[in-house]
Length: 234
Image (cartoon, rainbow, N blue to C red):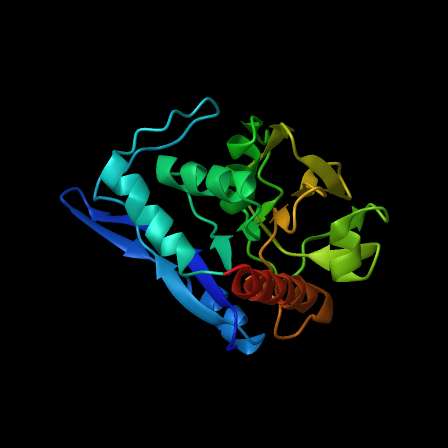
């Protein structure tokens, strides 16, 4: 049957005013490989950078949408990376995965994408206490009645923190973990196979922290089950 294929959504990166690149973080792809998956890239539809706000509007052409359908069809799960902004096409992908119950994990800005894709909104933190590069910055407490608790396996864990935004509301998703100072840290929709967003960066901790690794391991296991269901269906 083969390993589950995980598509990492590449982000635009403006190297200078006239030159755009796309990037995929090495830590994210390595976390997939190390936990038994195959990582591939989901590429942007064009070279235009369109920053998505709370009330984002789909602006893709029919051809661009079908290009995404073909890319996503190659995958058994999707990861949305962190980054300094959210692009419109990332929200389109998240909404598509939500509608068709395709496993998807959002990290930092990726969590914000998952929130916006289901009608939520994002605000800016008044201080930068969460925007630090330390290995561990604060603890989070996870709802024991959540999927997040099932996959991480512990109620209180220490996490890193590199962000300046948080969820004002989460639309159809639910907050299932908060930091020690009350900022939302994990959102999910328990009605889906895997629709989970984390505010922290487990890809920077998974090699030394078993609880952070559980996030990737559980995600890839879910993707493998989804792969088997697709094979049986076809």
